[in-house]
Length: 365
Image (tube, rainbow, N blue to C red; front, top):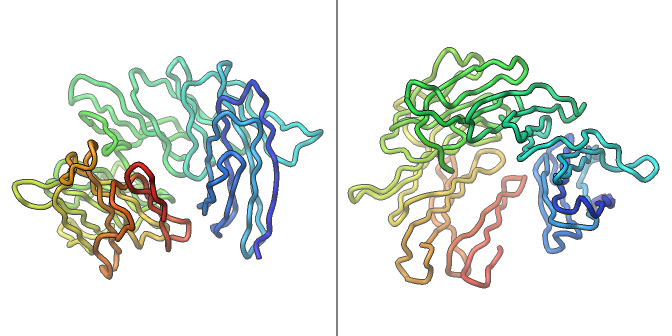
């Protein structure tokens, strides 16, 4: 039987515009969480949680622990017109949370994947990085004309994209946060959902790669100055590196000249002429969403086209496919209802996934 922990986080009325809960746990066992703000939502969580609640008066959470004793760090943060605040979670002294960071003016904030560091983009376009355990500012970066910024999974690196006018200017920069120095730079003409972040890391940052013209480039994370090795994939249009572990990379090649689109899975670390360990081809596909499971053994593919051949949707059509890295499974996922696939998510075990799909009245299974 699971052991349950109940707690309530009070939210002052002035701070109900946005409320975040960040939960960090010390192991990778499954965890169930439900809340009064999302009463219909029961989540099987990974190691860390970052939820946003809209306009609550309070957030009541129930944690269900399975098979082991747990230690949690619960923190909350608010963004309001006066700035960004970070405070300790329960248990509270005298019924009040302790403020860890008080009203830092900002336009955007983002945690690293492991929850160890916080990136805050301030109104003057400065990027400040905070250590989440001590709530102290580690470093501040002043980068003119930057359009995007993100943290690596462990918060070791800051990656930025700047607007430039010539290819001679290297506008994608990977910064070492501890030293404040760039460790890798490159030119990227434009930024889109499929090309940002330009440099992709696995969760432990042991593997890093980027998509280039007709190839995937693997960087040496021990010494970025050593350059990269290449995996040649003509026509590659999108990639997704597996996270835990970073053992495989998925590559999407769009449909062209009567040749169907395809998603191929390659093992990382192989030579440039490596053959894919798994492959799925399909017609009527212009873009894909690639979603790896925990364990890097399975890949969900949401194949999307701009036009719905059945004329049921103005927004095109989408199909769900499933591939495994051992090549044992390759095919479409049978769904109980016709219609577009809106969202797919893996459980933290990597053995189950949920899909939201259908027209008008959505289905979840």
